[in-house]
Image (tube, rainbow, N blue to C red; front, side, top):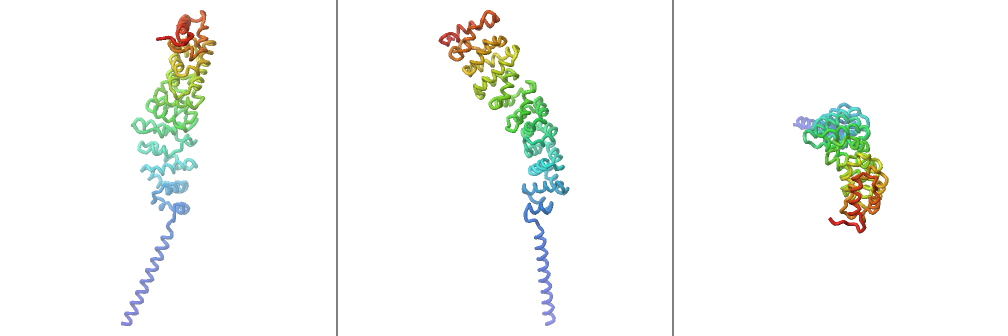
Length: 356
């Protein structure tokens, strides 16, 4: 019995020792686990980071992927599943020049299911967008053809600067992508080059309500847009700007000053209706410019006389113009003389308003 008790004590001692040893090992293993994402990144713990679902963990994997192929493989799996945080990591890699970033984003842009997510992860206005122009164009066409939302892709193209000007022109010229492209041109990040592309394409490539909207918006804030409207834009757009209350009267005066100075007689003939709209909305602001043009530029005379309403209160709203109407001479065309006489008898007569 004594022997048994002594043997049992030894067994119990060995068991307690083994238990203590197992605990120590477990504690050691636990101590090897990273304490945070930052710790895991510093120690290159790809597997641990891969088990996490946080944005910070994916960003850490992205930085490790610059030199660790295991991290690239994890990110590729996540990209295949459409992970937005992975596309953000790929864009950050692209910005710092890491080789793995651009191929991942290009592949994602080529898949309709995730193209929009990839586009949203990429930075608007960044010079690195030049690396992706063919893929962005192709993605925009594919998304619009299938009725998906291509605006995030179009906005990247619009923001990509000089390098993307040809791409913007091409997408404006394509009826499938014209609407999305013009919507993108309304974004604050849209570049001057993208707006130049809009002004440079043929009128048919601007034939969309969204394109007209962006022109009106630009006319409110951009001198270049006003200059283009006055000097080159098609009559329909000039008419929209002349009628829209969003284009202030002082800006409309500047627009028509450019038109009078730079448009040919052939152009002038097509702008009678837009000029009539401008005179209805802002007669006092335009009076000086119109009267000067009527006095000095024979090419515009018939257009201006045709745009004035003989039944309107011209004597009070455009008095300077009425003075020049009275000075239209026999040397003018028969149509100009006839119209001047009608105006003099009507709205330009003293007292102003001729009854209908």
